[in-house]
Amino acid sequence: MTSIEIETGFGPARAELHCAEEGIAVLMLGHGAGGGIQAKDLVAVTRAAQSVGVHVALVEQPYRVAGRRAPAPARQLDGSWLTVADEVSVRFDGLPLVFGGRSSGARVACRTASAGQAVAVLALAFPEHPPGKPEKSRQFELDAVEVPALIVQGERDPFGVPKPGHHHELVVLAGDHNLSADLEGVSRAAAEWLGRVLRPLA
Image: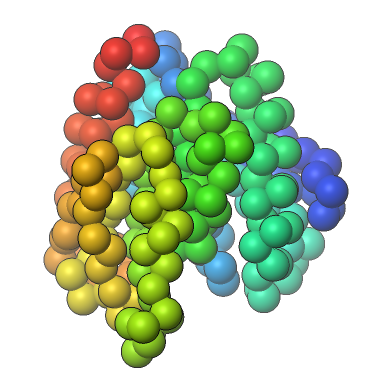
């Protein structure tokens, strides 16, 4: 594992690089709003990705690197993410990038997929709406993703369960927003999907 610091327009971000033996792509994973890259589902997906030949970059947003818990505005999150994506792409010789993350990180991955030329998006615990406010849907962020996407959601997630789309697959597992009730299911879904969507690029 290698940790690198990347200067963004909003302060330094950090990326923890976990390399596969022979990587065919790089999966960038972002954390939730108040959480970090040590979240159990992110750790599980990191190992799953490595097992199918995908390098992983666990990305810490500048506000977390600076020690703050309150998330930055979406514009700052997205801008910092794209700066990190550029650096990661250079470090891995232009390998295809898969954008991903949990909760807030999943939203960032969806919003930046087009601008960052991601080949696919992996959304863990996508917050479909604020708890108790289904009328404030964020489904449009998922629907705007034009590349293959996998959404892994807990069946009792208080943030709701998104709708699948024509190239968006939805896997619903036991558990809630933290997805820790079935980490094996999370790993299996991620590994199978990554292997399938990246095979044509290998």
